[in-house]
Image (cartoon, rainbow, N blue to C red):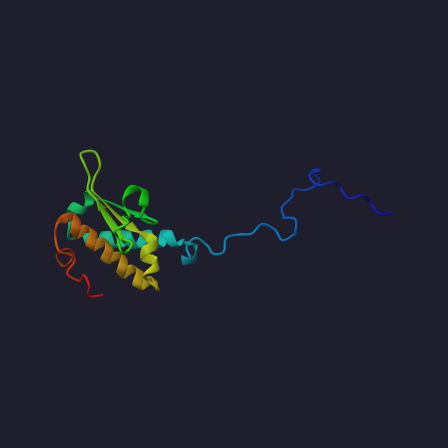
Length: 149
């Protein structure tokens, strides 16, 4: 005779596999492999690298906040109906309690670049343009290599 199968959760043994018997899935790649970095994290790294390059020559940028936002928001006048193109970045001048802020819009930049190298160049150009606007200088003054990549 066949012995009865114990009901699930009866405590006969720890349940370490999913219902198909394959076990728990692990990560696709270990954390040290670039695959484990999301597109947003990779974009943030590009902005950080660009800011670090500029801060060496412009120490006053240490007091400026740099941020990444997915897209410009129409509800906060970041995107105007009169604009012909979607902006890639924006400068928000600070007041007494908030520091100046440079925002880079991730999705518009990603759409305009095909490879990581193109994206890195475009991110740097956007950061340089926004810093130049904030400082009241020409982009070529902020970074002499601007537009040459």
